[in-house]
Image 1 (cartoon, rainbow, N blue to C red):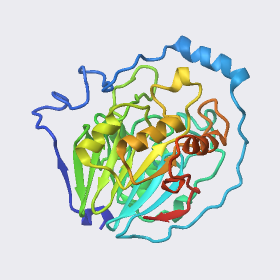
Image 2 (cartoon, helix red, strand yellow; image 1 turned 180 degrees about the horizontal axis):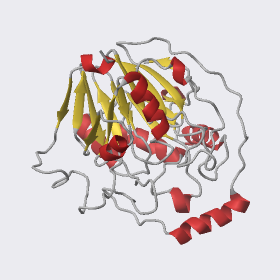
Image 3 (cartoon, rainbow, N blue to C red; image 1 turned 135 degrees about the horizontal axis):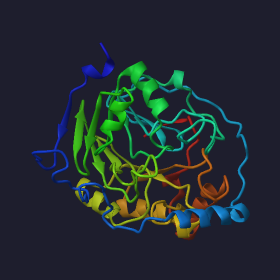
Image 4 (cartoon, rainbow, N blue to C red; image 1 turned 30 degrees about the horizontal axis):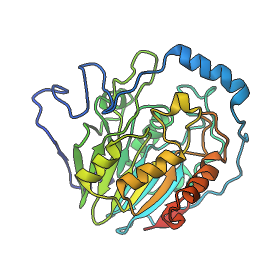
Length: 335
């Protein structure tokens, strides 16, 4: 029997709907979702302008970073163990559940594997060393977060439950992944004694040219005796305070610190280190771990810039550096 069949799973709807998407918590016009604080979509001309400037202004990355791969500290754990595999892929072990966020084991964050952003560092845990996964959390459908090949491998090996934003289920089903559930913002599932709520983020979605914002994006708030917030991919907004108000201050916040330059193009949808620290303060989280850095060159900042800038901002803001961690990929951290 597959591992997840032993779990107690239910969907707690924050509002009753008689038909799909008839009424949603996330802004939705019947075709496209939107942000709580909407921002203007970048045009193809904006994209071309950025790419032309990047020829001179983008900082080059190393082609390959020497790194160590670790084995999980435990196959299962009641107390929380957090392992950032790299980018936004995080193994969360708690309540005897193995949860993984935005798992990505492919060579490139791209619709094809012969072109596009190529990983410069191997995953901190090899795929074969991953413990049996019960729940896969998908923040949104961009290629550096929703990697179909990795999801298929997990589905074939472990048959976990896949959880994502509204209208993502059909994409997964088209790829042979049938154990999936779509959530609106503020909707939840429960497994064992753990509640997982899909929460707002300020971002967007697209897999191609003509499907922008057709699938909902967000973060996840995981709560049992220990509360963990996973931001996914996001810009800064008042929703961080709303999450804290509705669900309480987390014990740990997993917040992106990379993929943020140039600001004129990235600011609306991507935090920089200063924004990440403000989000951490808005959440009133006890601790923060930085994610979404040092794996794929997606933007113009240098490889070490997110870490260096984060440390500089911590010092400028006179924050406690012991509460803010830059993880070693693959290394388990007990909470």
